[in-house]
Amino acid sequence: MNRGNIYIYTGDGRGKSPAAWGRAMQAAAEGRSVVIIQFLKGKGIADSAFVRRMEPEIRLFHFEKSDENYMELSEDKKKEECVNIRNGLGYAKKVLSVAECDLLILDEVLGLVEKEIITVDDLKELLESRRETDVIMTGSSMSDEICVLADEVSKIETVKFKVWN
Image 1 (tube, rainbow, N blue to C red):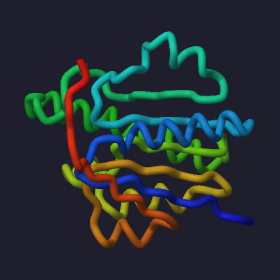
Image 2 (spheres, rainbow, N blue to C red):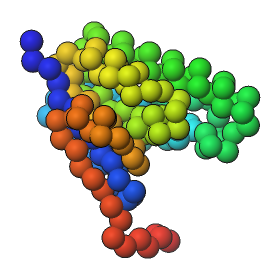
Image 3 (cartoon, one colour):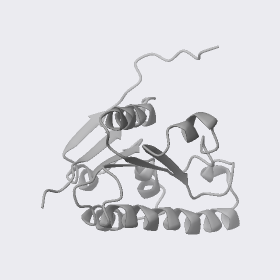
């Protein structure tokens, strides 16, 4: 059985998540199914009418309940969100173990390791459950231990930044 490839988009630049979304659009255009699970982004854009129109080819999930950024939460709220995040990781493992999609995007999953919400071993265990499913992981930083898990790593850096009006 062939194993899916693992891709990482990392770096301090803007555009990691949009790059992953671009790959999702490409995959959907090729007739492949995509599941995106976002972490550490509050509710993000899950309720967007645009995102709902992409279903069933691209399905987006959030397990966090707070609208606020994780780092701005009280310690009690962080504990609650950690339970929700672990539920999201459990769902990701199910998606991989039953090959529910062709491409799984774990948006900002590397931030979970950085913030010590999960360990590198947790991430390894999750990735081991994949079959033919390709996986894209995003996040601002990664360790060498995570880097060796990937088939391809793209480092994104911002050279110039101008806010759009």
